[in-house]
Length: 131
Image 1: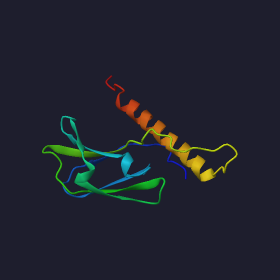
Image 2 (image 1 turned 30 degrees about the vertical axis):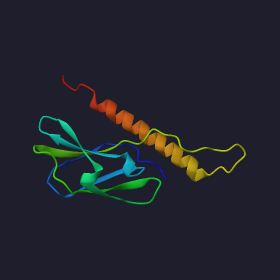
Image 3 (image 1 turned 45 degrees about the horizontal axis):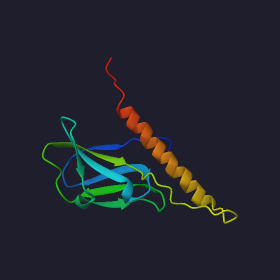
Image 4 (image 1 turned 90 degrees about the vertical axis):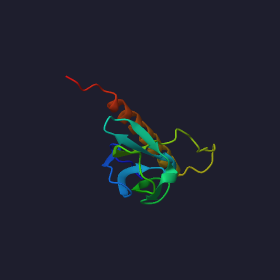
């Protein structure tokens, strides 16, 4: 598995109870956040109970997916922002003189890369671009 070079949160026009696709790598449902955004850029969290999720590919890293809203977003919603928020955890315990699985190590590195991409994307959101 190789993580894509760049991560950009997916922003889609809100069109009601419909399918919304994202195409970035993700470690599973736990790493997806969905936000409703209104015209004033006020963000409201959409609970996972308000949509269904189908992931593309296979674990441990999926190749994007599709959410389908099962409840309307708040009144005034203009966009949905589908964002990756990879848990900052290290659950692998390599044993001294034990097996050294390349797949496990590659997953560890891929997960760190995704976390770094998310940090970089969040810094870009905070840059003042007024002349």
